[in-house]
Length: 364
Image (cartoon, rainbow, N blue to C red; front, side, top):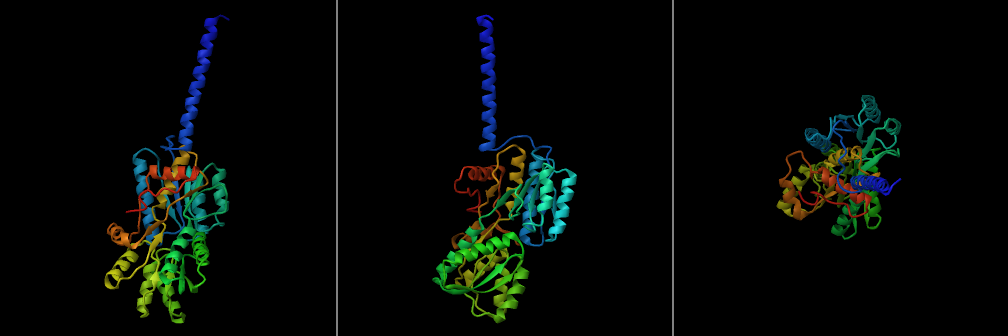
């Protein structure tokens, strides 16, 4: 073999290595940082929602539909249907089984139970379907999870209440839906933080189902047997109902931690303007559904995504109340929008541990 031939072979070999190196670099960039651009135009991403009976969940579904419609228009997905159960794990499992049969490519689940869906979720994973569990938890390990740091929510509540009450007071706790993993996690976070303040005592716990009407009824039933209540720890959606129960009973309004719903914030403003009432508001956002959607889309596009992606909570302090309230129609909630780019930033922050980014969550 002459020198010319050897040179030609070497050039071809080096060229191949260069091409492979470039391909590897592009793939790594898509996997480890930035938006993955693998084609998902033919993909179907379904949303299985455990419950649609509260304003929060209704806004959540609407957020999903809006972001999915735009993604469909942009050629990023084929479709993204939503099916809601009536807070029944059995009904939700049947819905997910139907999605498997229909051959969807990804399922985003807001789970009714942390264990009851494990079997059908395993079926989905075995079928090669990407499963993202959002704003809830399941114990099946094949899923990706998009959720909040509920301990941080409990910390915000207890630190604020303790500061206002100088470490001593009688509290009422309003929980969400009994048996729900998110309800348990929030309550655990509240009590863990309360452990730092031995002067804070819980007189009673009721379940408000994250809904004002249920919270009002349950608090009203509890109040006759309760001593004076200094503060109410909540989970979101229950603050307005609690306040109405106290007012109806002719009892002074305690510190009620609000949950970012429009009715709660409007009541806070009304009481502030009338008598200087002070509190804080903290909660998840119904736009978490947008985060779940984009995480599923990016996995399908080839991005490396960790098993847990943290979504920032939205906190509203007194100085921001008017600004936030001005952006909310009646029946709405604090609802920062999450674009594909902002969700990718959350994913990248989870891959390379850094403070979770707050795209459009710190301000309305």
